Image (cartoon, rainbow, N blue to C red):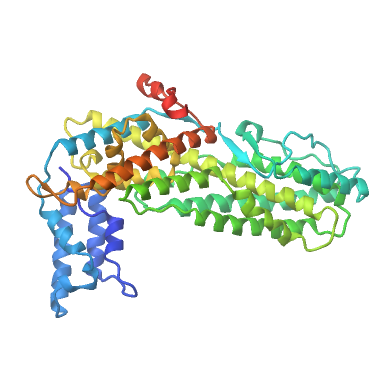
Length: 477
């Protein structure tokens, strides 16, 4: 049975010392812990013991007790040594947790996602129903053009729920060569913006290189191209009357899109995912903040001021054109997030399918089976649940992860369950913490149902039990 040691990422945090580089001996412990967390093999367990002894010897040779080391400020080295010596103990609670972990694997191993279907909620209010074919040929800067731009501008700011099926437009067909050249330049800037958003999301949530599903990309660019064409059609409609005007549309758009990305970074990081776990309030707030980022609540408000950055020349149409560009950036950012989220969920489902298949085919639970280890399972599942709020919503509302206590324990580092000696456990959860956790979980359930509805994703399963859960009003009611 795998030992529950200190999770690698927590070990790094607990043994950090400001301004002090990690010694080769300490790095050896780091590497051995990480290897054991992934493999659960005895050779990696032995490597931890050897590395820990080497570090203590180095500290001794330095002339002071290892217990007094600044690295041991919260007794991490003592705790690691104790955990290495513990004999894993089975009890009713660890068995319940094992069943809850198995429920998670079963649920997601049998789930499928129609990733091409989703919805986005727009505040920018692009006129996506407009007919924008063959614009630009007959327009010249005029009062009529100014009126058209004003009319487009007044449409911005209304809430729309847009299905992904409505966002696959063809590139605008224009007869004016100058407008065509302008649109090609703007297309390049919008493509760059979309790629920046994708890379930013990946960098925000890529917390552990060992999680193979996080690195999964999948096919996404062709679907974004249709969305960019949708935006370009709107830009063409608003820019056509001003092609001959003094306002430099391309330069203004470039500055606006650059400002949009900078504001998106600030917006998303302000709603960043808190990966510190353990307390129920942190679990819930982490998931809720990720849900807010996924829906993009408040994103348009964060972006819309970017239009003033690009409006460097006086023009009747400048404000309307750049407002459309900003609204287009809102659309692109939200669609890219949805596609990114879908690709990661599909990869996670595939990972669960492989792990569940391995579990069913094994004659007994092996040392590398995640079901036996709270630390290993927590490190694997937490990255998914915190990163992809649909997973948290599906698991929580389905009830397959066990009761509220079981769900909270999915995220804890499980040190409650490590025996000090037979029948005694360290730091059991208090009644007040449990009561707070129950209240937070009840609140999160309601938030989760709203997120599942707002996402517009379509989940299905060929397994009757899982399909029954998906059709239950527990999830989407």
